[in-house]
Length: 391
Image (cartoon, rainbow, N blue to C red; front, side):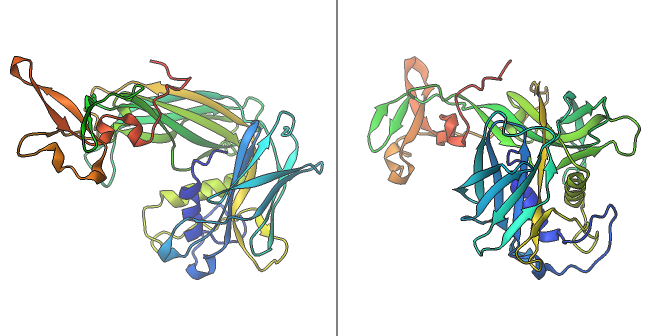
């Protein structure tokens, strides 16, 4: 599993989760927040994909200081039901990675996670059977308003939906994660650069157009256990509004579908319900969600999280910019004049990029702006067009 919901999920777990039995209903209780700080938290899904897969291990924080606390230096392994062991290497920030090759991960085989923490305690999950995920039937988008408490007049944007089915009726429990990619532009063309002296300047490559890729936060689950057919139509996914610049040029959403066990579904859907609650901690009681991580070296030690296995199917959609106004980050020029000389820029601002402003009679002046207004890489994206990108 890509780490699409890690910090989002772990923050919810650290605040709300109670280690009890599986429940499908809300049960009132009095939270004892201190009991659930400094507990080991495991986040990971083993898929059928070859290549690098990641397990994240952290510690829960207390309610008043919710934060991600990485647990580095652990020994992390996955064992299958035939005795094969796959070791994960620590990469920092609580991440542990392993490389899987063709034939390592097979449908019908069961896998178990083991973590030896820094304090020597040994934690294990139960065995989870790897099952295929059915192909996604469709991913669609509708441009429609969305009313929120913050915007009672309604946002404008795209609502995304997924439809899926399993003709064999073997799945029943689903989860989706998403990865979004959008194109963005730097509006100014650099002509000069100031670093204590003025230089004619241009970038060695095109910095005007970039692409940003990020995981979509949130938890999205669905089940067909209460209906006869294993068919889900138009399940709501994420909403992308015009109040960010993601829709300014072109936007793409990659949807990944996971086939869950009943236990994994209870875990993820419980977290989904918690994160959708709008009331405070004591206004709507948290769900009692049981993970599948236990401490085998000391039964009195509790742990949080869930290790699951799943096949993955995926489908991508593109949407064009809407006709409505789409927000974009402002880029304002600071015109260089005798009263505002370039020499006034401090060394801490170097390099200062400047663009030309045409004047009558073929003359021009200069204006400076934030570097991101010239160089799209300054925002953290890439100027290498993704292989999947189409117009």
